[in-house]
Image (cartoon, rainbow, N blue to C red; front, side, top):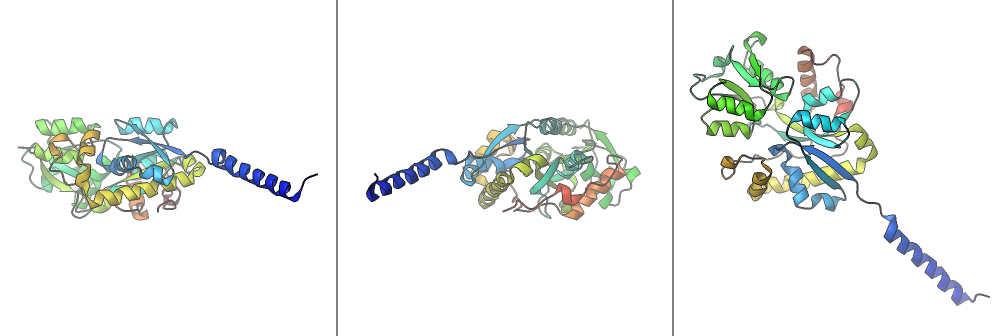
Length: 318
């Protein structure tokens, strides 16, 4: 027969065992998000968040999958081998033209009235001095991409008609940079800091997106099925990115070595390159989205409208 004291002791042991079991086996492992990242400056906040332990502190693991090109990134995302990526509105449109496959969750980097993201440059000794000189001149671009979109929009904003804009498809940025530097191509559209390298080699800026900053931006996106299955992981990811952005903007020079190690800024520019502030939490506007849709439809790249509300979400921002 149990005494009262024995009953109390057994009850205590049972409760203690439950607590110990909960502590040992009840806590689930943090979700892992695989990010396909190009070696571009726009990805710096993710690398900083990883280096500073911000992801771990937020309770999420992030695995970085380096990719050399946008097509490689797109193949990895399509195969389900990565969960998220750095991309832009135009590529998001193509992902979602038949069904919603990815969603934009944050603006990664954006042009401002004082800080360009994309530039159209003229080769040294090309004789091109002002934007009107570009009429009929073949400009090196990457067809069907944000580069093509920006080229059209910036020149149209300067008064060009469609038949005055001439382009030449040179998909790889290093190839465009090399052709511009050698003078074999008179003009090219390049993202920064590749455009800063071109300037170092004697190229000149003809027009950039500081005059129309609404066009120049990149984004972080995730596959829709990943967001639906792991909303808290996406929320934790964005919270950590926000911490990284705050730290970078406070003192970007502290990450000079990291930028060099990852190849985000070319070696010759490292010590002098000015890292402009990264945008704080936000997503592209409906107007920005709609303009890209209209461009893609006008170019015959998109057959039907793609809804902003299904492709862009601010629901997971901190």
